[in-house]
Image 1 (tube, helix red, strand yellow):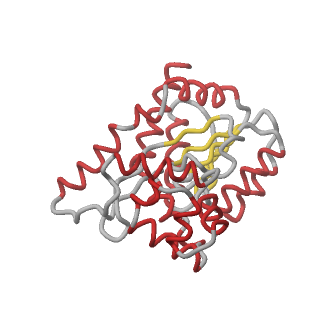
Image 2 (tube, rainbow, N blue to C red; image 1 turned 60 degrees about the horizontal axis):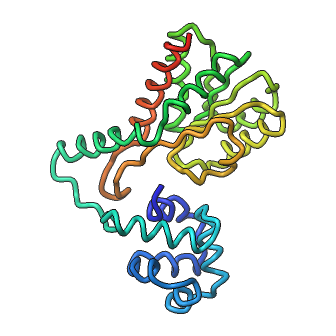
Image 3 (spheres, rainbow, N blue to C red; image 1 turned 90 degrees about the horizontal axis):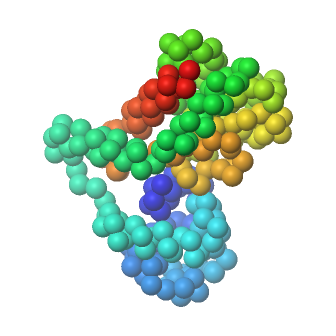
Length: 252
């Protein structure tokens, strides 16, 4: 995810100080890319430690990494609000643009690795909440078409309980666009504690526990403003699942 998408993702967690920083970043991205943390903090009217905490809240190691990502995003020419949708073709082109990026995000090796875990597991559980629950259910159906049994778990209240039943020969797949959903991260931690191999499919390359997953698959995000474009990332997830299924069919 780019810096703006991460800011939108964590907006509900922001303090008053975070809000000041967010507004400054949106209005002055060039300043972020050009100056060190002490200058930016002074210009934004916050402390250096508040700005550092803001960067870490987004998932960055520190200000330097955040500054680099903002600079990279500026160079891409996309640090601006998307235009209002004018026609159905605009929506289709948005989806197509995202789909065409999939090969850059999902390598053959990652698909093979995930496939081997699936084929070697004694029990497969696929976790997804709300819209991602639909993707989890679809994934289970598609595995069944290959003769592979799995369990789609879509009720957040039982995620950790289901994870607590796992053993080292099982395999858990978590589907979460944000990678920060509380019941997902809690169930993932329970799985790690029980030494159960885990995978996650997410848009957030800085998802919580990213370094602990045995398979970490990121997918591109739709270029959308939540107030203007009514698009759903589940469409990209469904195509990703089909890529996995097709790779599995060749491994069988």
